[in-house]
Image (cartoon, rainbow over the protein chains, first blue to last red):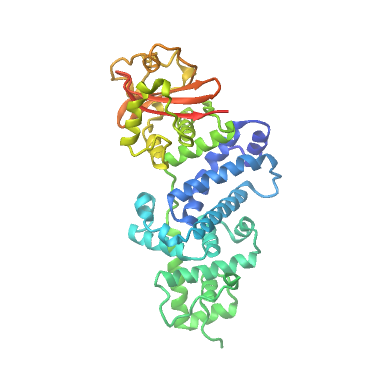
Length: 193
Length: 238
């Protein structure tokens, strides 16, 4: 398989098919990130388009300072965050927007765990802060290690770890696994900023 | 001896990121051990979520958006290469997206031909001024059979359909709908041609490039057997 660097070079050199290959390669990753970040397939579709149009414009100046996969992760998360902020300005909560996820994507989730459970988890994920959701999406759903998450989000490694720990604790609380009387998730100073 | 761990530190233990003291504490504290198990369970649930897969129409819309980006707003069907079928879907989608973005012009000169189309739009809940996002999606869905699509330059002429496979193979021999559309007037240059289905019926899409003071593209969706016009839309070009 042609590596990303070669494809980007070919694209910069005018080979449009090379860009198509990059789209084929990263399309599902970008979509999945956007879907889990935003909570709806329509947002995921729109974010995907924004990401690849951005890529089409930006890759011609791409300096290979970061792995292309990392670059796509970062752009996908940032585009998702932009969409969420836009949604917030319209006073539409992520939870409301993520209300019926299983109705849109019944197949894949049923393969993983029971559909009802998947909806519950999906909704719990939607209730996390954007920062927490981003680290869990990249680390737990896309199997990026701490360093890759740090690179993708452009935050320090220690911040990645602490956010992942806090986010997982909050997920456990939202899913009802951490009961009352058990330790509460630690406050995140970033959330007060 | 340390107190019970915070939820964050429990998660750190679950992830193997905690200190030796914290790890040891959990082995001797039932409450904290239970907390670690709870966090592991939540993490397992999260990881069990399957990665969502984009829908076919979303993938088509993405390629259409990219086709538009490449063409700077003018429809340029993506040329087939390694994945011709996909390219065709993208080309069809690009047509739809382009047409969806602007006003559907009802030309007075051919009002007699287009009146039924306006009714069709209305019946589908579409204002003559343009398509809704949903209607675009519906049109994308109306062309799911990628193999049924053909581009204009792959055919001697859009009305020459005897060599076409797919959806129209069992249909009556299609007529020269291009002539029917233009009612004996000069047929403008054909920019693209697609064959597929429209509302579950065999359909052809003729896309013409109209030159002049108001250059634009026109798309006509017709039934191939009798040239009944099923849909019309137009898109200004530069």
